[in-house]
Amino acid sequence: MSFWTGFTTGLASSVDRGLQKAIEKRDGELSRAKDFWMQRKATKLEKAEEKKEAYDEKAEQAFNVLAEELGDPTFAAAALRKLGTPDDALKYIENVKATRATLQPGQTYSMIEDFKGYVPGKDKLTREQALEEIRMPMPSIGKVKAEDFEVDDPIARLFGQDSKLAARAADTINKRYADYANIDQRPKSDIGTIRQVDLSRQIAAKEAAYTDKTRGREDVRFKIEVDAAKQNSSRIDQAIKISAAAEKRAQGQYASDQDQRDLENARAEVEALQRQSRLIQEAEAHVKDMELKELSIEEAKAEAQKRKEHPIFKSFEDMAVYASQKLISSDLSEQEKADFERMYTDAIAGANAYNAATSDKEGTSGIEFSKQSLDSIIEGARKLELEKVPTRKIGDKVELIIKGNEAEYYGGMERALNTVIRRLTPEGKSMPPQAQRYVESLKADNSQKAFGYASSVASQYAAAKAENKSTAELNYVPYNVVEGAVNTIKANNTGLSDGQALKQYAKENLAPGAVVPMDESKTVYGIWTGSKFLRAADMGR
Image 1: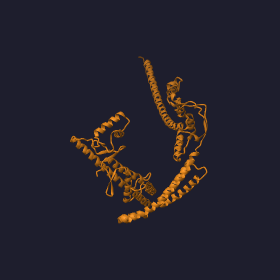
Image 2 (image 1 turned 135 degrees about the horizontal axis):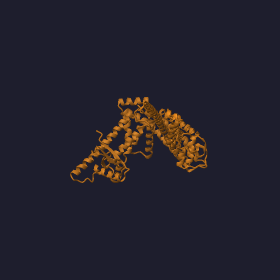
Image 3 (image 1 turned 30 degrees about the horizontal axis):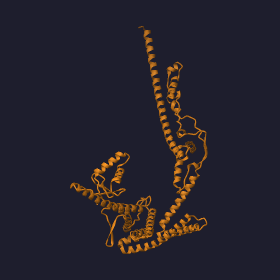
Image 4 (image 1 turned 30 degrees about the vertical axis):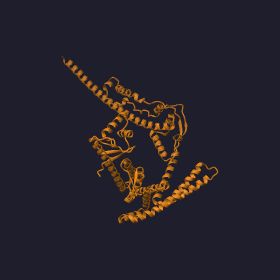
């Protein structure tokens, strides 16, 4: 090879390597730039889709409510457009719900009346078309330009093709995302216009609710500041006014049968309240006399302190005790029974109102019914609930016949204690701790006694089976029999729970008083009453 040949070969080889490196550098930069913009486009698309999905979900939620209320999907779409964003529409709907919650019985609130001056458009939409109308158009994710690719391309420059490669790269990416850019880019339908959304009725309803709330606060204040006798006196005055107005209507030229009934009811209410007034006076005298005779010195001191610090509460407590003791009497007329029931209910309600209004931050009050008062209240509830249990007279006393009537007895005790819990618990509050402990203890005693009865029946059944004796007279069903029956019922009714299947089995197969183990180890039994199972558990007592 000549020197010249070697020189030209080396030069060509050098140029080739330089060109190769320039191309590789350009391609690498272009590849990285394309990857960057592709990733950026994908991220933008993902965010746009998330935004649209959230918007559409709220819009559909608001539309469904409006369509049901307004009765027309086109009207609903126009209403949603007038309200603004889906968030605005949902806020409007929540305000309507809040307004309806303040209405008095018989009052209604129609959304249609809020949308004034609706002029329908030329398009009538189906529900699906309306949903498409209110959904969010796909947000633009933008386009990529050749200038976005800062790529040094000396080869293209050499041949006068500078930026052509960058332009092709941008065009490739834009074509890749062209379909997404065109989603929902359609003209809106002519669904009509709404002149105004009138919210004045909501404001009026809220003002009425505020008035009711203020009046409610005044009622509570009246209950905690005025004792039972004064409250009853106020009720008598009000009832007399109502009676006088009813009498005037009944004497009118166009009086109806309803006017006459209203008059009779008003007169009866006045008479009932006047009897209550006499009963309250008797109650005050009776309770004071009982305190002097029956309470220990410590108990008398505690009651005296309560009367001094919480005289209103104590007056209601005394009235509840007196009424509960009177209700135990077996010789009451129907009218007397109704009078004492009313006194008892009013007394508990008054004590609860006082307790609730003076409660601490934990939701309970430091004011408690005394044990003597609770005993009287519980005894009254027990007596009323156990009326259906058979009795027999032994000398001067009447005794419940428990044997053979266990379901009625234990069920009556459970209902009585639950009644006391409900009555001693102010709305939205907790029962006073001492009363709660006492009543829960009595419930545990009842469950323990029921367990003793149920386990004795189970023992008798096991003994009879061991000795091959008849078990027909024993109202007992073994666990395996119950389990098999429940499984069969559930197999034929797949939607039923264990409890529902057990209740169905009991209604179809068990006699009241039947004892059923609720678990294989027999730690809990159920005593069937004819409509429900009473829980009989070992409470460790």
